[in-house]
Length: 131
Image (tube, rainbow, N blue to C red; front, side):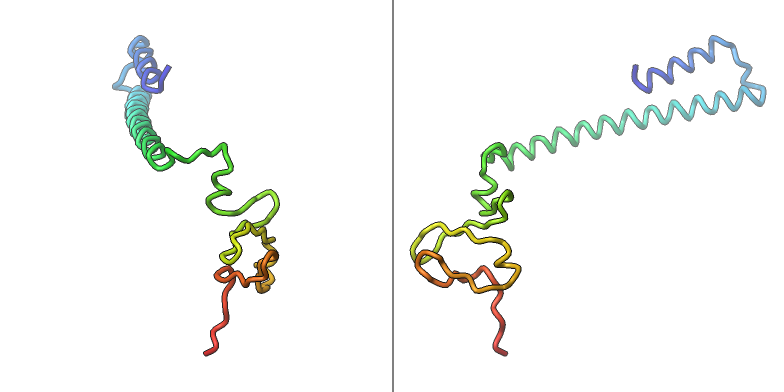
């Protein structure tokens, strides 16, 4: 039973009890029932809007991620980071070998050299300006 159905049921009970809406108590109960009715309609409208937004978001996600399979290691392939080991994967521009570099090297600010050919791997750390 939805909220609007419950409020409608409550209003039906009130009519069945034949409450006198001219008394203080009857006026309060009738006003509360009207407020509940308004709240129930607002909640129902909000739920409809949320459902529409959810459908739009789902369509957007399908469009953006249509070729991206989250079950694979595509994330690691794209971004080069293996979260399990804390290593980054790079291809040496000189010898084209795949190099795995521990993230602690970046934190310590060490110069990075290819372990295969000894070439300096540039662009993976900040150089100091001579100025």
